[in-house]
Image (cartoon, rainbow, N blue to C red; front, side):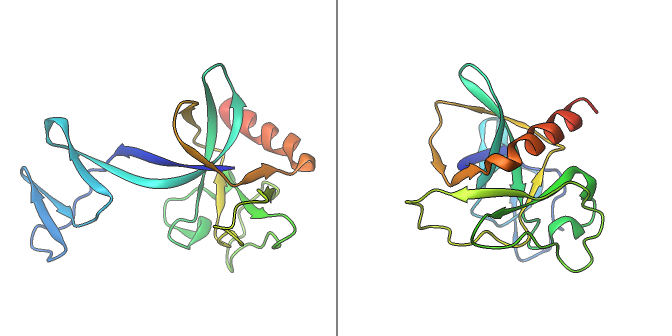
Length: 168
């Protein structure tokens, strides 16, 4: 498991222009957020530190599945597909526990053994969910922070569910 500064296109669901927490960029109202930047051609991008688990190592890059908390809602967030997710947790520090009402997660939990020298995370947010439904290409030449590795006994499960989602 690692984290990286991740930037992606900002969605086109802007706030109302009369919202006091919005500003105007070009002819669009955009919510005020330090993670939103204007780039070339007056386009918007959203940047944040995002956590991933590598699922397929290649030459010069890997494919990795993202870990989301969905604002602390886990897979209860509207529009989320629970069947694409697994609970992810720090093995030995916490138990894999679904949130109240989270009943459609069908994939087994994935345990991560935290890196010994990583003092930034003593516990993973209980709403952390690994999304097998969306893999990202991560280049090996970007700066990442190592947070740990998947437990050996969960590796086959991890790869099985990644490949199952990949092949639809």
